[in-house]
Image (cartoon, rainbow, N blue to C red; front, side):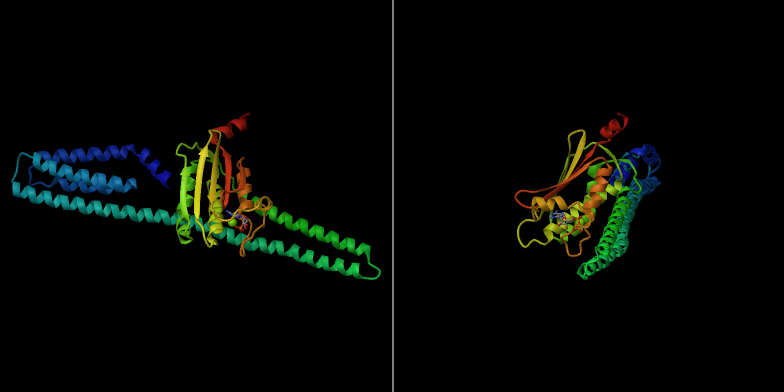
Length: 358
Ligand SMILES: Nc1ncnc2c1ncn2[C@@H]1O[C@H](COP(=O)(O)OP(=O)(O)O)[C@@H](O)[C@H]1O
Ligand SMILES: [Mg+2]
């Protein structure tokens, strides 16, 4: 969103020039016509058009400049009846003030629409995840039911006198086949989420992180988490899929918030950092929740591994697939003195191009 605005500002030098020229023309006409002629009301058009820059500061700038020029014209105009000029000038100033206010209102309404659209896009992604959850549960439950049935059959054949080794063997083969099927389902889901559709755009990771954090701000405040960021402002660009990388950052931030949400005591500090060594960018999400022992850390990226009552255990598995599809690595470690740090390292745009050509 912020980047779109910046692009608009840079891509529209002609609009700027046109508005400045129009203001100058109005100023000249206002100064060289009699005081009775209220040319200054035309500034209203300039202010309304300036709302198209989508920046409140720009609207205020044009409004203020219009007011100053109106007063200046009044003082500089040599001819006309002064009382009439004063009334006209006052009317023009009121019109300019009212228009600036209206233009700001319009700008704010448009900004709200854009914000809502961003939130809706996020909701759509979350909803897709929900639907995905239901279909995974359905697809995996079938082989699981098969495994249970075959397991019971194997136990019965073992308990029979004499035990039927052939039947036991066939039942165990069905167990293995069903387990393979469940594994395939999980693999397909991971590919689906992580790899489709793989777009590669130039991204500003700092902006991307800010956008994700903006979406989670309310949630973090509710769970009384204190958010701090340490984003280097000279981060190089990287090539990647914006939505997928947003998903990774979102997963890490939500996990950190959830880890601290259950704390009885202690600080709830979340530190999101991003830094670069020129070839790679490393993003880290540091919390003061619980520190996992090394054995548990090894398991967190596995699909369906969750220690939460309603947890899906897919967040980190999907995040790892996404990061690896981008040529990067994801990691987890204990934070000192408490909590965890989850992060990932991605190659910057130039470095990955080099690798493709070399
Ligand atoms: N910041 C964290 N602090 C402590 N444990 C974590 C953290 N992030 C993830 N975990 C552990 O890793 C598990 C898997 O996380 P994830 O794949 O996102 O699935 P889910 O959040 O659905 O449980 C969690 O259930 C939790 O036990
Ligand atoms: Mg999670």
